[in-house]
Amino acid sequence: MATKVVMAQLSPTMEEGKLIEWRISEGDAVAQGDIVVEIETDKANMDVEAMGAGVLRKIVVQAGATVPVGTLIGIIAGPDEDIEALLSEAEAEPAAVVAEEPSDAPDDTAAAAPPAEPGPKAEGGRVRASPVARKMAAELGIELGTIAGSGPGGRIVKADIEAAMAAPAGATRAPAAGAIGASEAAAEPRLRDERVEASQMRKAIARRLAESIGPVPHFYLTIEVDMERALDMRSELNARAEGFKIGVNDILLKTAAEALVRHPQVNASWDEDAIQFHGRVDLGIAVAVEGGLITPVLRDADRKGLRRISLESADLIERARARKLLPEEYQGATFSVSNLGMFGIDEFTAVINPPEAAILAVGMTQEKPVVEGGEITVRRRMRVT
Image 1 (tube, rainbow, N blue to C red):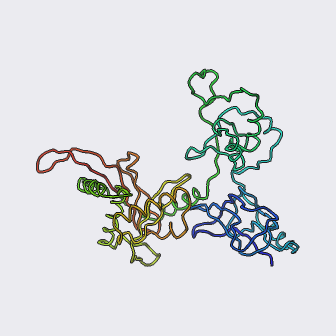
Image 2: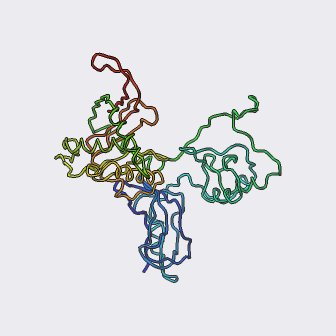
Image 3: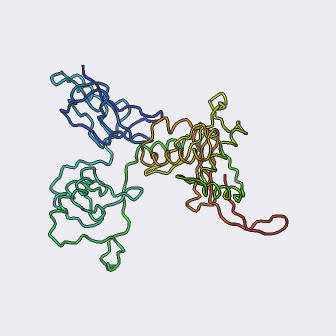
């Protein structure tokens, strides 16, 4: 019996997904539970398993396309099974929204275009290139940053790598604008007009911001706290620790968890016509990732010591940046902590993540003159909002 491969709803807020890569090709045998496709959701990249066995008879949606949840993207069936009805169903669905993943098929224009300027970089500093081009460049020892892309928005595709290999020996690639020795008259523009398709995460962030700032009444309270005893304690603990180090953020997470136990009214969320007080302290840790932000959840934070908080939060943050979190690891926080102190930010106002009631925005710790007992002294202070 034929099995549909559909764009699954892999998170509660997911409305559409981007097909990153087919892990198998048409005609390949498939067993139930095999990973067949990688999907970009609004939170992470996730693998989708086959719900049935057979052969991948048809890839309906190609890699790089963005389609709504529930869209048929592939068909698994027996080698001789009739799949015409399913194909007709797919043709009746709305067309896929193609994102920034162009075909790697070379055309005359792309093949003839010599590498002339470094390829553009996506958010986070990573050169924009198709998976095939990236693999070829690695195998051939070519630096992607030295190649001009001919794909949409200057994206490097397979034809650009081939053109770079065909360039005459000794041919130089033009330096970036402003490079030492480049003449001002010949310098390329330092900026360019470019429209970059939003990732699923960026779209979700935009929706969530509108949901939060608009209907949720915000008010901001900022206080400056003395960090001397906390930082002295951290130094003492780290002097005895083996295999790990306590960070300032670990102390903040533990402190926030204890505060929520003492003030349960804050460990709550609004549920249309009632207030939901939560019996657990599950802290969301705001983590900046390429293309957006995600909040992995440290469960039962009030019941954990600093060592365990340090180890667990480090693991969550690492996997969040690699986009390898499971849905249950980034959903259901009761309160969030966002720390920008490491970037030299004195203070800021974070946006509440609905349905949470509050979020703690943490600034940097710095030495300041303060008055103690009528005398001026220097103390390490931190502003939190």
